[in-house]
Length: 575
Image 1 (tube, rainbow, N blue to C red):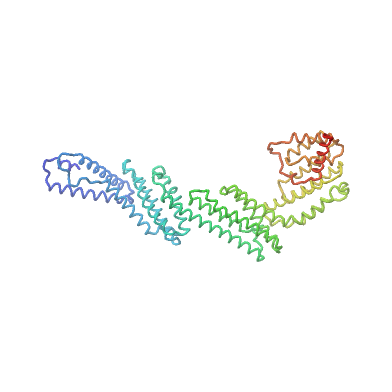
Image 2 (tube, rainbow, N blue to C red):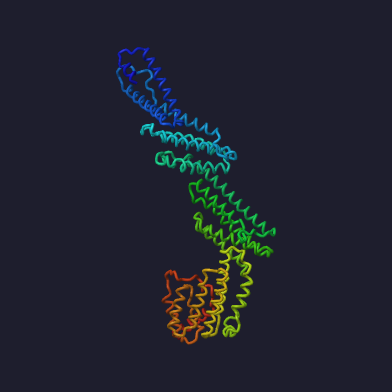
């Protein structure tokens, strides 16, 4: 450049010197382009120094072009303007195209690549090359001045070329798996793993680049993927259920794993749904569309419930082992449904409804024989032989249940505990129902009998691993205390405490309990009922028990209350 300044400052520069200088310029520029072309193999300080020198030459030549463009005195050199920056950018474009084309033609080194489709191989190799090269550009960025914004220059070129190839693939009648893989790169791998790579994040202007595919093309691919995925999920779930049902009908018994009956159905279903949702979270932009997949879980559970119900009705010899395995599956599926955040509230509600029906069907295989005996045994409650202790009603019932519940050792502990709680609650419900139908007055020894029965029942279920159900025994003891107390004020306090613990204790239940007592006047009964109604807590309380009394019907009391209302109205209106 100094020689150029000196030569053209003369009035008549010699042609020979111009020709030589021109040749020197050409030789220099060739070396510059060779250096730029070797950008991706430079790594040592000396190589980077050479690259920085080449970039400086490009800048200098660009500045010299501007100087000659503004010069009006004398002719400019024939080699001006050099347009080195434009040539540089064109060279980068050619380099990018060449490198991506070369990458597609070479094995990426992935061990599983031999099993991939041609589309998947190409997309992976293109993406891998883009990532590798952009990270390499970060290492040479200091060789360029900030105004050249070399990282975004390269990023734009790679984006344009990658986008162009993906657009061609998108209209080539992709299969479901290839469609999924293209979307994976467009919606996840490229924007999240490349552009947001720790060495590129904040340096690449991702917003300016936009998506690799146009919105219309992207929408078509996503719809194609969702339709295909729905069909696959539906088929997979149907296959799982069909395989499971065939094993039941063939008379097979489920495997025993860790001493409990086990079926792989729940694990298979969860893997199908969760795996599909995990894939979808990286492939689809609008995550609300995940419900198009989860709706098949809802439909599956309805079918699953029906198959189990039909099998139980068939009275097959292997029904108990099969039901034990399915109860374990129900528990696993329930945990998944309540724990995943990918279901809509309506879908979750419907799924839990189906699972509850499935669980009830399974438990009925164990509870139906008990319920029949329970009703018969409890018919002896509140009779003279029970009141005087000569007939051990509860002992006989517990002996029978002990025989019925001995075969639960191979039922999953969480299912066994839930089943025991159901049986426990059924016993207490029948006990209280019989109590509230009684038309006898309670003596103090009968209240003590209730306490003993409550303790025996609680001990029976506690010994078998039923935890968290002691509130049933405590509730019976509270009722016994109400029946034992003589002082109306004390009865009122105990009844108020019971009503606070159990918000579904109605006025009819209160009246039914008070009708069993002796020594209370009509005024006392009205006072207690009024006090309970006025002081019933309307706020949530940690001391409240579960709903219980709403399951106990007291029709004769309701009829009596209604009759009392009619009589009161008649007295107030004599006409």
